[in-house]
Image 1 (tube, rainbow, N blue to C red):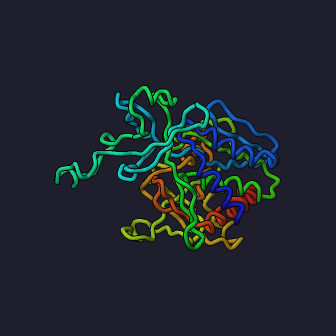
Image 2: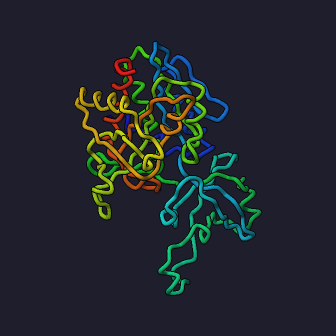
Image 3: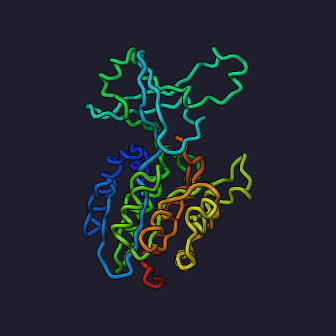
Length: 350
């Protein structure tokens, strides 16, 4: 499990907001190239690795991108206004350290997200949530010219700047576990699987802004069946009741039955049978999920052409879409194991 932890750390600490996934893609390429027969990047930026074999073909996909920000205006005094890329809970952004990604040597500039200080607020202001439009990025610059000399302009991508840290009970925290944990599962599953079937391993782009990469790659590859590996919201902490969030950290992979109140994926019975029976055969504890929240690449894949049977293996994760996401390395390992064994047994079901 030490190698899997190191892989997750490398992926999570890399930066790649939607549309700018290049650094993450190159890590994935380096991990996969010795284990596949062909590897390429398509026009949209998706990484597609193929391990040739017989039918049925299986696609395992994980999105490379993370939520982030983008520069939309630079004030004369050097402060930067920004737009969000992907779904943020606004309160988690305030007072965070960020990195602005430029083309200059060194690849980035540090900044912090600030707002009007509490000491300058009136009583009624302190009782209100601070909105995105009232926040700004402070680089320490004194003017717009200084900011531009650093290589920053309208459209510069911005990501959270957080390091991977180990907590108690083999739990870890960092930014971007959504979805670098799914990427780690995808890579590890391919390495572990001893299969005679054709496998497409796909690092998709721009999932957080519309499942875009999954749509185009599924259309090109047209696999017989697909798995998306992603995070799944976990509870088990104050403020969340089990009836609302039943998934828990430390209780194994999550197999999605339905998400987004059925507007996302409704996993076909054939896929559920495949994943559940594989887990049971190899004594992998698993959890089932029905949610009203977001969805994954599996939704876009399932709606491609005449339809592709698709499912989701999720890594239970707390505090999703914040800079301090938290998961269990044991769960991560079991997710990779389930995905690997499912790939090996795909011919028994499709």
